[in-house]
Image 1 (cartoon, rainbow, N blue to C red):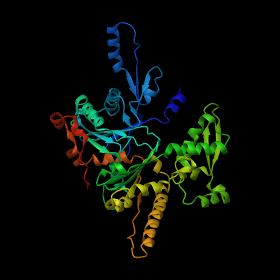
Image 2 (image 1 turned 180 degrees about the vertical axis):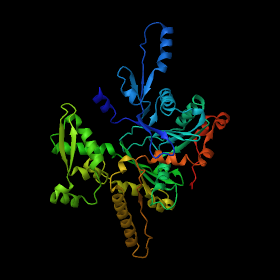
Image 3 (image 1 turned 120 degrees about the horizontal axis):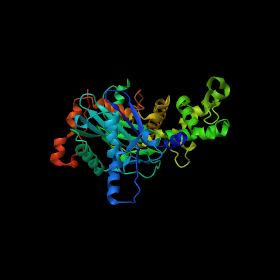
Image 4 (image 1 turned 90 degrees about the vertical axis):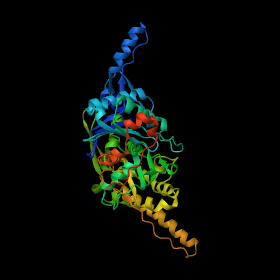
Length: 448
């Protein structure tokens, strides 16, 4: 049962929740719900009565995974809420059981992902509370899923204002909150909401340009390379070289190797030479325990340390259908944006998500991107016969210690300001105008 549950959780969406003002969420739980499905036989009145009882008999998160006699449902698929009834029940337990909060006393913030993600953040009037849903993301590169529809935002408004009777609701965008989270970095001289966000989690990587708090949606691009692909690639490398890993634990071992030992190297050839000339200095050892025999097994971790994250810069290693390095994707995104915002977008490239946490990832990306930009400027000068001397472009990739939970932390930080209450839609607004008020929300200003 334990192994099956663990396998089931590899690619599932998660919910992160906790209190604003904190740097990390207090709870991270699977975004699933376990319900009783009554048999459709017998007396109609009895079935109706049983349905009422079953509506109260459900579990969420890890408890739902551990209920084999219940039907496990996932209300969020590919970042979009598909079952609003289950979503409402899920949120009910999150609010009352986990956060132990009274929704009538809290403001809520829905963190709407740029394309796929759908997140909810709950804020308390004094001690602010945050919830975030992160959806499972499609790996398809060529087809762009639609933005979360205005109708979805209206459904959310109905649940929040009518079912939970919240006093206020705000819908934010993940990329804007990621930019705000980067303000904690020493590299950021001014607090701006203009920049390029590289959000890389487990399933997919987004490159999202933002100008003055507004996402330039037509220029967003996706890279079908993320944390899961790095894990699979390391798993493949280990399988080819290390025979001592139990087959049923190869994925778990690869993930542990990725998280403990992996880093981004500046030059592949030089890195190979380092390991070949002085292997004892660079090769690490990983020790695991066989789940069946309970005996320890030890493996050497060598090239896998730098080859795993290298697929961001040489994606053809893992995906022959996609060969564009992340630096070229970022450059293409910015070049597709209006010319007057391109320099600010190059100057403020912000990293977000766990898969951007590899050591020297930001440094390598900045170097490669700077080379691409400088080569274009040099070509422009040559084509003009030396008459045109373009001004150098400042390329900065911002790394900071809040990258892993950047969106969550950005929401935590911004919701702690007085302006948050000024931009929220209130219960009174909802009663006067209706759920359509949540189709649009004011943009947070640049707060001091």
